[in-house]
Image 1 (cartoon, rainbow, N blue to C red):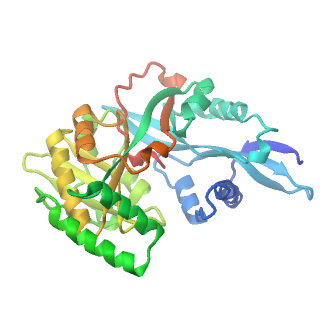
Image 2 (cartoon, rainbow, N blue to C red):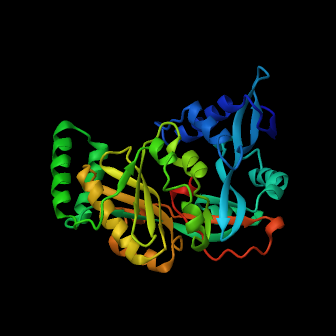
Image 3 (cartoon, rainbow, N blue to C red):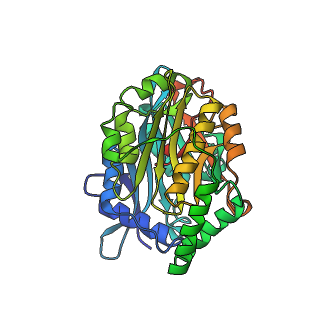
Length: 362
């Protein structure tokens, strides 16, 4: 049983931290993986600044040290109306199970907060049980995450269940059935009100569409991650090891919308981020009609999106609830919470509503 110590992350610690985090993940998910390239990109490439990290280390019999725990804060640029804010999300927080009886993690995290909170306006966290665990640290219970999913206009639940069978049994016969099913779904979707302009990551990063998009949209977005080109590029377009397609549309009169879709699973697409401005229900309805048709034509069986219970204005939440259902076996999943802590430097900051998509889940 070796000596434990804590210290700040330093240049050159990336490999040891990545190995320690993967050891923690693989005890629950043996196939979990993350490249060192991806870890370094997240840690060092964000427009809000580098991730702040604190390590828990244990000394081995030979005098070497290994990472057995960690707390991190990932800076993200936010806006609240005309105000620019710097927030942070807890990231890769863990402590190996065999260390928990020897180390008071809450006290360690409190020390990390005291070191860092003056640099951020708000710190937030996501995951099961976070409200209870971090309440002693000053986190307020903000909201709960909700998962919406759409399969097809007819036999919707059956389509969504079949997409999960495809994920676990990707054999040649089932693949052929899935492609036929996708073609049938494409024939049953409503006629899309418009066709998207489709961008590759490189095209999106250089597009005129996003140059002033956030200046137009931020006034009605509430507490929202900033969606300038630099922020979108770091979160989606230049991130290694992931595949995103960006879809945009502009209406006559100035209304605009975009959707960023994760297409890594060819049968289960994820709507990683979206925004319509103005934030009107009819515009989101039209966006979803065109999005469902686009997915079906590409052979995807389902489209899902994560947000929080109040993560969009009520008229838009009504559209998501009406057009998309809960995923199969939802009742057996642990509830994922969204909590936040307002820094003393912005105490009293009025936060009417957080705008939440997978953008926040760095």
